Every structure is written in C-alpha cells, then in structure tokens.
Image (tube, rainbow, N blue to C red; front, top):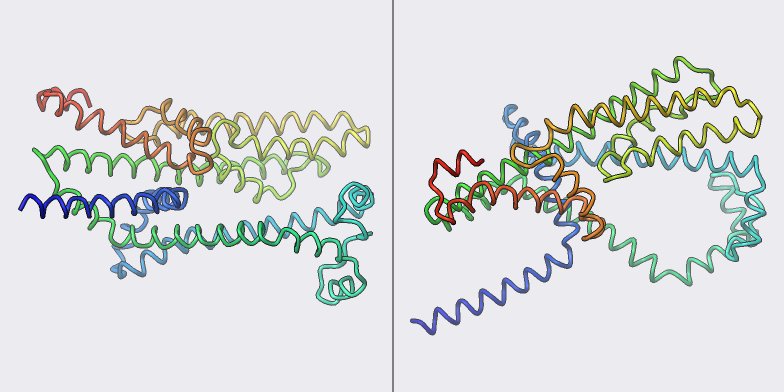
Length: 358
C-alpha cells in the first residue's frame, strides 16, 4: 500500500511540475486572465438577474471589454495615421528620415491610403527597401505577432472559463480543509481580490469620465489654438494610463501639453502659454490628484493598505516585467489576507483575537 501511495504521489508530483512549467511559460497571460476575471466577476453575477445562461453572460462580459478596447485602438490608430500624414506634409520629415534610415530610402512621400495609390507605389518600386527590411526580419516579426495573438487567445479562454467554472475550482480547493483555516482563507482572499481588482476597473472608468469632462470643459473656455486635441480620446487614454504605476496619467497629459506648446513657441504667441499652464493645472489637480485622494481609499480593498497597494504597482513591473502590473497586486492581496486570517490561527491565536486583529 505504501509503495502504491509513493508511486501515485510521484506521478502527481511529475504532473504538477509539468503544469507548473507550462503556467510559468504563460504566466503573463494567466495573470492578466485572473486580473480580468476578478475585475469583471461582479458584472457577470449582475447579469444573472436577467436569467441569462452562464455562457451568454461570459461572452457578454468579454465582449464588453474587447469591443470598446478594439474601437479605442482603431480610433487611435486612424488619428495617429492622419496626424502623422499631416505632420510629414508640413515638415520635411521623409527626406530627413530617408537619409538616416536605410530601409526608408527611395520613399519620397507617403502615398494616399487607397488601394490604387498603394498598388501604384508598389509597382513603382517605392516600397522595395521596406519590403527587403521586413523580409530580413520576418522571423522576429512573425514570432512577436504570433506570440501576441497566442497570449490574447489564452487570456480570452481562461477568463471565459474562470467566469463559468471559477466557483467549481473554489469548491474543489475548499475540500482540503483543516480546522476551517483553508475555507476561511480562501473566502477572505477571494473577497479581497475581487474588491481590489474590481476597484481598479471602477477607478479606470471614473478617471476616464472625469478626464473627458475636464478636457471638454477646458476646451469650452479657451481659444482654439490651445484646445486639447480629441478631448474624448485623450480622456479615455488618461483613464487607461491610470493603471500604470508612478507615471500614470502623466504619459498622456504631458505630451498633450507639449504638443500644444510647440506651435505657440514657433509662432511667438507666448501669452497663450498661460492657457497651457492652466491646462496642466486642471490635469494635475482635477484629473490626477483629487480622484487619487478621494477614490483610491474606497477602491483598494478591505484589508490591503493603500500605500502597500501603490508600492505593489510600482515594484511589480520592476521585478516581474510587464505582467507584474497585474501580478504584484494579486500577490499582495493573497499575502495580506493570509497574514490577517490564516497566520494567527496557525500560530495558536484565539479566534476572537484573530478577528480583532483583522
């Protein structure tokens, strides 16, 4: 009997190592999936009031995230192409770039974004060096593109099945209970993760709405020369950028201020720079500081300290890379919940003392 148990245990250990290795290889996608699951689970449960099937609710939640993101990226790309074309038509950028970047040689100007213009430019040989550059780096580009879409597919699939079967996995873990410690810890960690990560989603939405209102209000009061370009898009991007630690929303409103200042400096209309300073004041105070002081304490979870959460967002990307932005808050919530619930019990503290400490 002991030999059979040893063989089964060894087999289980080998399987666990294999699963752990696969999870490690795709830790970024799995982390983002867990982040999205806890961010959207309340919305998924709320749809249950409409008596929709679980699969329909899961698809609705994922579409609710994916469709606005695709529209935002598409809109941003179209505006970027439009503004870039306008910029290169105004300034001799192509000529300067062609003399310094080898694969841009032969491109005198950017053709019209129509099928006929692109085909004509291709037959004229204006894209030969760009095509040669892409062919030479095809392996790297293919690996990057396929890796991106593979990770996105993993995120969608894992998020979908976590929404549908997450409670089953939770119930499976609860069967390994020892004096109710496991059950208490899992329930507390589950609630804390949902509070923190759902709070992040609410924070992004709230800041995006505040930024859109602030930028549009600013545009209504200032001359056209110093208005925020595309205030709705700028406001939404500001909300999304609030997820990034330390720099956060500054990566949106500081470039906007710079873009507003450069034409003013070139034209010598220095009195208009006062409006740019006013825009920065609105962005820093109304969009960046006040929401952070008022909203974050209510959206940071029940046990996790706001300062610790901010440090997690700062240190996470530094230690783990990009996915650390999502992984560090999850790890922090698990650790803080363990310290408040399971650790006092394991150290022999009375139930009443443990509850008081939490």
